[in-house]
Length: 184
Image (cartoon, rainbow, N blue to C red; front, side, top):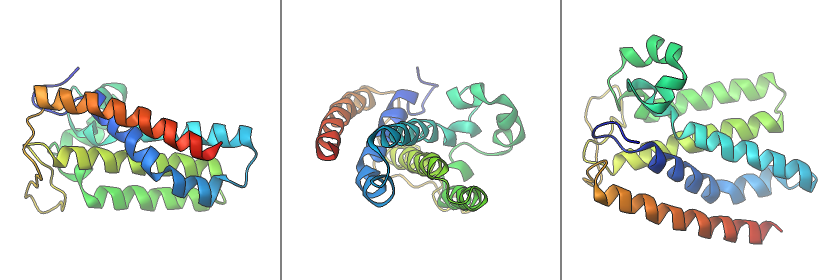
């Protein structure tokens, strides 16, 4: 389902999965390899789930979006005060999330579960911003500077976006097969 003129939830979710799978070798080799197989699987599921969740977070500033409907209090407190594709679609937002994630990790004594959670959210948010950069509307990447940047001019909710979404499915399948072949 799409909300007039904005990239669909499905496209953002698939992008979140792809970015998470692309970043997986770094996280897996540097942080997860030391744990037993069953715990690694649980940690991977946490990481992948929160990349899905993170891929939706930037649209908290848009009334009627999937995430703003699920978290109406946050939308009312924060999202209603922002233009769509401004703060929550910027590099500053990623820095704020990274800072909050670092605080959470310090408070939790660098707990690996929280590391997977924070990493997934940041990767998902980053994927969302990258995907919105290729739309005609663009994003305010350098917020508070109010210049919308757009790399391509893909019209959202168009046949082209739907085709891209289908291509993302194949990329996910390929990456899943490739990544898990490497880790077994």
